[in-house]
Length: 344
Ligand SMILES: [Zn+2]
Image (tube, helix red, strand yellow):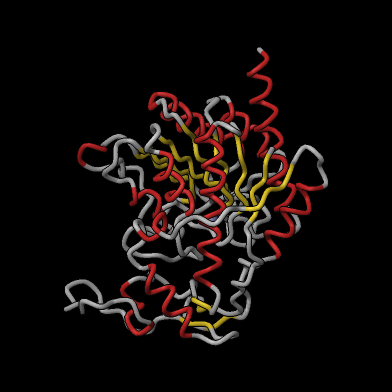
């Protein structure tokens, strides 16, 4: 399987965040995540690496109204500085016409765990370009499945606000690129609900979105991800949420995934995008499910059986000891199931 990696080094490397009040000096989303995945995949000669291309900015700017805020703020910082907004005007505020400077960041960012550093804009754009490069390979038919090794993740970045370690939405930008050629289904298997992705396509019936995640009554992002969110207006019925309890194990997870797969099959997309987070693993320091590494075999098989041209896009997963093996298990079984289907 082709693996698309970013064209820049991971220069976005924040060192602290706020956590329920106090500052903590431990950030889980480190560049070492990408290294761990890449090292494991390249031990297997069936995976080959290609570098992402640079796409025009318009792919990103047309979806993310806060792109200038992120770029301007990043440019205003020196190396080593980390910026969090400290002014949150809330709804009903008399917003100025110009809302793209550091001072006004509270309009755009939902939390205090997603800082901007000097290189954030270019690194987040490279992450989008990685997904777009992979999407283009599907669109041209040169590949039928591609893995985009994105970082930062994207699924919490939406059409109004960003947060949750995410700046620009990689899978949403890829779907926006592909939907000109046919309908797209996005299945988000990260432990956290893909609220940004859902909101992008809430009213668009050509893109089906589904997410399996920790129930938002107890888990981030808290305000989205409930089962009754099914899409709006003409797009009603094109969003499917599976909120799951703490310590969900494989059997219960697979039952939910089968429901999602059936819904995707009924939608019959031209392309499938998997927002692939591995913080569902039992040993993940952030997630609260109880999946084991071996469980990603069956998860991959169920998705591969849809037999659609598929973009697999990296989202979360924070245990460096198991992350590479989880990704390898998933991709290996996805490809094997796909190839087996081709022969039979
Ligand atoms: Zn996550």
